Image (cartoon, rainbow, N blue to C red; front, side, top):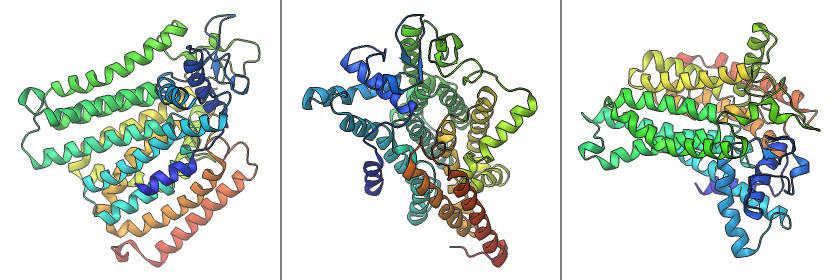
Length: 447
């Protein structure tokens, strides 16, 4: 945990880089300084294109879901009230601390959840630590700790959901029943309420991902615990977050649905987006274009699986768990359908790969179920532990490159990126193939 805290502290930058984080910081600044969600008077207003204009000749607003800005307004208000720090006068301090309070904190929570998940699944302390180190240093998680974004907090929430669902499965395996609130199991019902609140929080940050996560969590808990009241407790805990999100958005847009997907809100002089490149709409030329785009989201030069090489093990590990591990089948099916749903939804309703970001930012939360499947593999298939180490080393090289340039600068702003990326992929594949040729699976060491 101390290492994670240090990484988060070192990772946080004292400046805003892309339109994404500038748009979010602008909302926080204006909420506290001017008591409005409109960002027209923000220090970063002229530097971001991620803004909508719901009413002609009206003020501009960030196109990002507003709940995260509401949460970050709390520490900024404290910073201003206690220390007199204003964003316009102390940009570096403002950016650094808000990055630390959002992405940095989420990174620390996510790392802790990975270690706890490994232990809940049944890994030894050493292999739980190895899994945690791989996640913390060999995926795109650390790069998203560098600037303010919603992807890493959503990942932290998703990991906490997976951890609690895994704990429920472990408890149901070791007991005849799982008591609910009306049966006097207040502590156990608290876990259900926590799962619901985490799903609701994820929904408030990223609606497609959080909504599908809520569905997966409800089905998993309902199948494991049986009583219909399980669904009620989870949904009730999630509901306040959803109401808060939609109420705030409706307040300044007059609509319930995703404001950023409305082309009319982008129809203003200087807008860089229109109906043809907005996320949330079908803009593919045809089925072939959709299939190619969906494939590249995973395996292209920014492909999510290739940017996190250990996921190339997690996918077959999920298939193995589904086929050969009945005890984890419910979680595997539900988590797998969540991943599939998020992938297909964004593949269908986007064409821009998430903008200028490291890999595909929408898929960052999908690292959560991948960690679960890797933990099962490390526990039950020790002959693949060396493969995991090789893939983690390969991922660490990519993660170091991504970390240096940040989540919004590693791809679009580095002409050398494609050469580096594909060279590392080729070298990683070559090393793994050499290892597999020298050490067949049947003779692999059980570390």
